[in-house]
Amino acid sequence: MLKILDTSTVIVVLDFIHCPEIFDYCIEKGHELCVTHPVYEEIQSNPTTFKLFNEYGKISIRNSECQYSGETYEYLKKRHISLHEGEISVLCEAKSLSDNDKPHYCIVDDLVARKRGDELNIQLTGTIGLLLWGKKNGCLEEEDCLHIYEKIKNSSFRIDDQILRMLIS
Image (tube, rainbow, N blue to C red; front, side):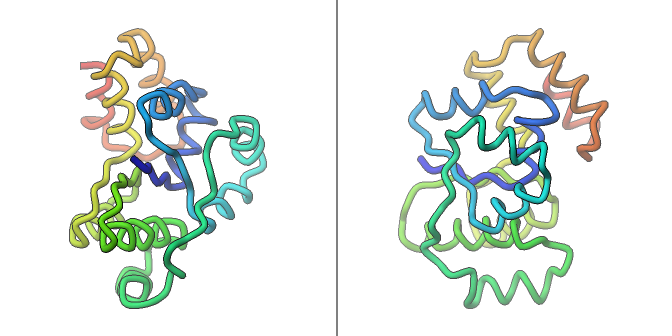
């Protein structure tokens, strides 16, 4: 299954918590990891994350099946101005894949983007959901989760503490 990552997930996993093992586990379980071109451009704007992204080297840049235009793009761009191009592109890509019955999953953290994804019947979770999946399936041990919890808590990643605490409960 294709997992479409938003910028925040790449930043958190590769830069903030230094846990590429969660991405490796996805690949081991048969998932292909990708970012859209607008997400890749956002990653390029952060030299540290861009370096880590390139060093990791296992996330493809999706050649879009949609042109990030049309009805979904216009709806998201005009009605939800807080969304960035990366988030919009992830949702548009997912909608295109859904419309063509191609299995996929989005990893998006922005609350507005997640709500719009739900409205569009897009399968999604956030970075913490991805980490919880890894914990549930044995990729991350309790000690790993505590370390990740502390790293995220002390980073600039905005997350509700109740959600973040799920990593250590």
